[in-house]
Image (cartoon, rainbow, N blue to C red; front, side, top):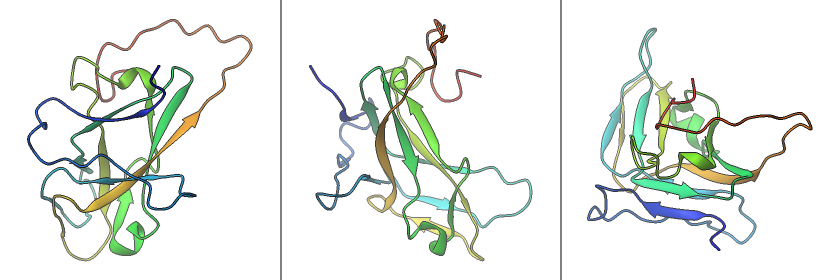
Length: 150
């Protein structure tokens, strides 16, 4: 039985995507690279966050999720996650809308555009177990990808 891990999503199989790794044996986070070159424009009121594709999907146990987190050096470079922390449920994996492809959504708070190159480490993933309440009665099933549980 598989517990948790990363795979390359459909459409990115031949794009030299690297599976995330931890840099030290005590690191919680798996470093994730950008799957393509992208420009994050400097912030102005009303701008939408820039979605940076990873070319990856991740699987985990039903009672787990994974968190998309900024790197500690991110804010000093101008990277600010649009949603502070991205939380991805286990049933996002392989969904019919986008095969479970997860993206990092960033704002750029520097005074200039930021050029992200394919292979730049853009964030980290941490797998996390979660708990439910005694009276939990969730029965719904995911039918789509990003934002589909609204």
